[in-house]
Length: 354
Ligand SMILES: NC(=O)c1ccc[n+]([C@@H]2O[C@H](COP(=O)([O-])OP(=O)(O)OC[C@H]3O[C@@H](n4cnc5c(N)ncnc54)[C@H](O)[C@@H]3O)[C@@H](O)[C@H]2O)c1
Ligand SMILES: [Zn+2]
Ligand SMILES: [Zn+2]
Image (cartoon, rainbow, N blue to C red; front, side, top):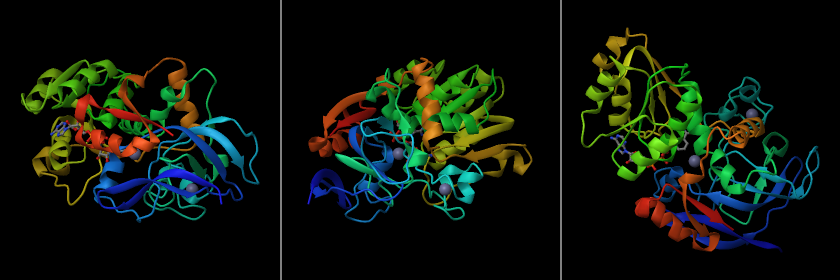
């Protein structure tokens, strides 16, 4: 039996790099040898038991690799091709996929909320030496030769999500945009707002190094929520309220601030993962008569999304490599989880090399 190393979730606060059986490809599947991956904030929720997955699952959902084996039924790919695979792996054939809602993929049937998110959630994930890719024809995106693994790894999840928040907000050229939280997701939403042609971009966080990075990603003005009255500042800077606000944390406070910072008719684009209840104070949305729009986005995936994001990087519209602040080997991934979880040493994202 051939074996590989993989990061296995054993139970709350317990992950370990273990030897597990190398997966075998079935029809329509591909096996890729992982060359670079990373850890997502959502993996921290899993580790802490805040998002349930089954013990024994290999976690991680941000894969870059090389095709090692191809199952029957795939065309246009060869062993050795370098590929990026999105965190979300739609089937491409269900009602959801064919209606353009790839992230809510029903796997050959109807719709399933979050159904497109399978790696490190419902099937084995990417923090391993090898990864089995389902519906590979819909999900393997070949990486142009001139792009490095480091240049594309963040496109699998945080950039697709952050840019997706800006796209869902339907930012128009010249819009004012306030982005609440400048973690990896918020930083990519800031970069996304710039790509969409926003006029003024305001980045909000309470961490000085992240606010500094926000400027690098495209924020014109940054606000430290611990030091200033953010709502008053946003209203002043935008002349009465932002056209679009992006929520990138998942708390009542940031959701409410994002809503309250809008002008009437503005759009709140929500990216955070919430727990419990979100409250909507009636005054914050003009008792329901303020023509506000509230939209949510799960990271868009699939090979066409990845191809488009790689085009953005290839033509130098955006450079995400400054966000990769640390590198670890797969063997030391538990150290990487500790650093990332504690937000120590100015970490934003960690590169993991099997
Ligand atoms: N929608 C999706 O598809 C998707 C994908 C991945 C992650 N997420 C979610 O996005 C959220 C953000 O992820 P992340 O990895 O960037 O998180 P993170 O924890 O790394 O960063 C959060 C940031 O929020 C800042 N912050 C805390 N309180 C604040 C406040 N009151 N106002 C402004 N900023 C504040 C922190 O200083 C930190 O920089 C999480 O809920 C995560 O689960 C969503
Ligand atoms: Zn993620
Ligand atoms: Zn589908």
